[in-house]
Image 1 (spheres, rainbow over the protein chains, first blue to last red):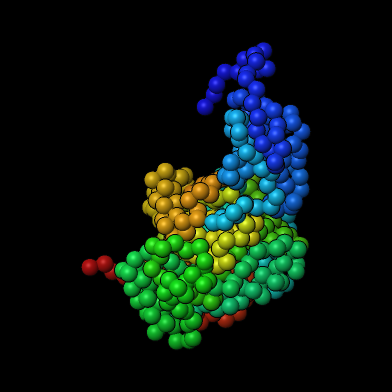
Image 2: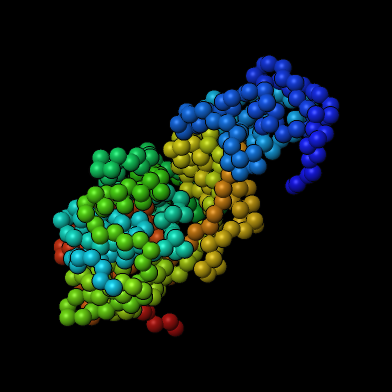
Length: 103
Length: 372
C-alpha cells in the first residue's frame, strides 16, 4: 500500500510520455497520474456528474474520488492511485460514465 | 428538566415511519413533538433500499396486499405534495418494477406467489410474468442467465434519504417540536396523559405514538402494548454514478436518480450488528452481475449494513393500547412503501378517526397462538 518516495531523486526518474485528450504530455515514469496531470495544468480534470461543476484532485490519497479520469479506455480511474507508464492514454470525462456502452 | 410546551401528540422515532406519521398529524392541525434518537441509533430509514414495492407482498395476508397497493397508488400524490411543500425532489419513479428470476424454479415460485395474492386480494391486482424477450424490451441490459421475471406497474423507487429529509423539512415548516438526540427510557400514563422521560428531559402529551423501530420492543410494554420486533440485517452495495442504463428498478438492483447503482439482496439474523461481511457482499455482487453482466466492470464505492425491523410474521403492528388509551404502537418493515398511508389514513386513525379496514388484523395478539 505504501512505498517510500525519495523526493530529492524524483526528477531523475526516466522521462516518458502519456497522451491526454490526444495531446502528448511529458511525465516521469512511476509518478502518480494525478500529480503528472496537475503539473501539466490539465485543469479541470473532470466535471461533476451531478452539478456539472469543474473538479480537480483534492485529497491525493484515494479517498475523495475527485480525480477520476478514463485510463486506456477504463472509466472512473482514480488518477491519484495510478502510476504513469509510457504510452498511457488518458481522457477527461464529461458527464457520467456509460455502463454497457462506449464512454 | 422541562422541555418546551406540551403538545397533543408525542411521536417517538424520527425515521421515515415516525416522520410520516408526524407529518400526517401536523397536516391535520395537531400539535406534535417528534423525538429522534442520536446518530448512534440503528437507523433503518438511513440504510434502506428505497423501493415503493407491492409485488409479492401479502401472499399470506390479503389485507397486507390491499394496504400496500393502496399506499402505492397514493404515493405519487403524497410525493407531489411533499415536493411542493419543501422543494426537495424525492426522485420518485413509479413506472413499474421488475423481479428477475435466474432459473425455472424461481420463475414457478414467483408465479405461484403472485397468483396467490391475485386470487385472495379481492380487487384488481396488476402483474405480468415476462419471458426473456419481453423482459429485454423493458430492461435491455439483462443478461442471458435471466429466464424471466415478474412486472408490476404499481412498483417504483424513491430516494429514501431525500424522503427522510423532506419529511423533516415539512414537519419543521408545519411547526413540530422536533428534538434530536433524545432516547426515551421511561414512559408512563398519568392522569390520562402520557409522560416520557429521557436523561435531562421530560415530555408530556395527550397521545403518544411509538414509532421507534427496534426500540419499540422495549418501549411498547411500558404502555400495555407489544412489539416483538427483531433485527434482520440487509447489506447494500453502491456503485459509481453512471449514465442511465436501467429504466426500471428491480427488487435487488436499482439505478438512483443521481445515476448510482444500488444493489441489495440479503437477509441475516445477526442481532444488533449492522456491519458488512465479504461473503454476503460478494454473493450479492455475483448475483447482480448474473442479472446485469454490464455491471462486471463497474466500481463499487460504498457498502453498508442496516437492520430491518421485523415482526415474527413480517407484517406490521398498528395498535392502540387497551390499558392506556391514546397510546399507539406502529411498526413495519416497509416504511417507504407505506409512508403515504402512514401520513394519510393511519394518521387520521391516530387522530381519533376510523381504523382503516385494511389493517384490521395487524394487532400483536396474533402472536399469542398457542404452540403445540
